[in-house]
View (cartoon, rainbow, N blue to C red):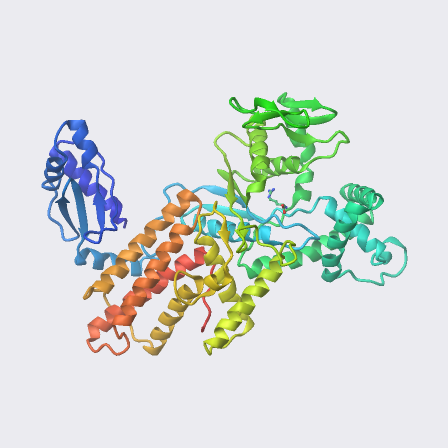
Length: 585
Ligand code: ARG
């Protein structure tokens, strides 16, 4: 049941009767005097050379009287539509019984692969992985709710120099002896070893040329699956994946596929062959490149200080193979698309990363389209997330200016949640603190447009009042506790007896329509706002009515059904945002 569509159909029929073959569109009204509004009569007036006010009246005079909507024309020529109490009641009761709470699925179900992990083996997850995980997980849930089939792939960075660096460092620390020297394996590598080894090796790489060279050799040996380099790599990968998935899980992100760059590696030769066959590959200083510029790109605009040409709208060629034969990051992503298309028939492949990879994906997508690696009609989409900034407006860093580890952020959030809970006199166990801390972070993040930067303000995110995650969680906890106190009393038909109830039902209508906006924009902010509005409408209702002690039995039954509906719709939306609700707070 979609009110907007229903109203639009009523208007279309009325238009026809009045002699206009037109579709008028309807939108929500924030004016307070009506629920929906149509301002299409101005365009009609121009087209038919009449006065807009007259046309509007002509149309509504053709509408048959019904008990669901009231139509009215207001100056200069708006058609205002109010949903009657009977209409709202019918809808509310339907939403309560409908499995999806009145939410409509998309007409066309799409098969989508969503790539929003990007964690790197042997390196700790860091702040840069936070937003893609939060946003990607919610988009996946949104798409599924609306009827798409979605596969998520973590796409591990498990094939780069960091592998050789980590292994060499561990070797030099004497931790790999059992693997490299025959004899007893007297040491088991731990996750702590890994977490220390990579940063140390990375530092060393920039000052010790010899070490770097050797690490490159080791990386090559791993990639050629030479023993025992490759065996140790597999152990490192497994250890690392365990830790990575545990951290993703804390964020509520889970992936069906745990493939990595290493899996794509087997498809690189074939991808390059396909590109060559299409005549797209060009040798440039020994390396292999693909020109991907379109018309209007790469317009020479002068000379840089170093003598190179400066371009307006630059679109450099995509480098797919180095002169020494090695493949690059772009090649891996191209090969990954080839691999995915061999396995699945996908309508869309979508990626969530920050803006630093804009050029990379543009190039990769163009190579895949030109070469046919991505078939015609398949959409390749890069969803660019803005950065999470500190209070100084720059990307969030540790005090000493280092990249923040994801684990540290989670700990920070949990501690803050514990502080809050304790000051409220509630129990502050780890599980509750995780649910509230992470929920606060996620809601703070998803309330912003995906592409925008925002400031990580833990006090603001964690407030129990206002447009925050904990506020929403608190409202659900409250409904749970009311229903618990009612001790199994059953609800009845919802009927409207006051304005607060009307407002709740209107908020649910808006919430239902927010899903489509989010789907179109690939951003969850509209859902966050609508969810908060519903929670506020419930809070007002709750403050003004004593549900538990209501003495009119039918009215109490209607109250019970209404708050059950509120909870159902809130939980549905929170589930899309992958925000859990604690038992108590
Ligand atoms: N591993 C990369 C990083 O940490 C991100 C990978 C993004 N996804 C992709 N398909 N390239 O920067």
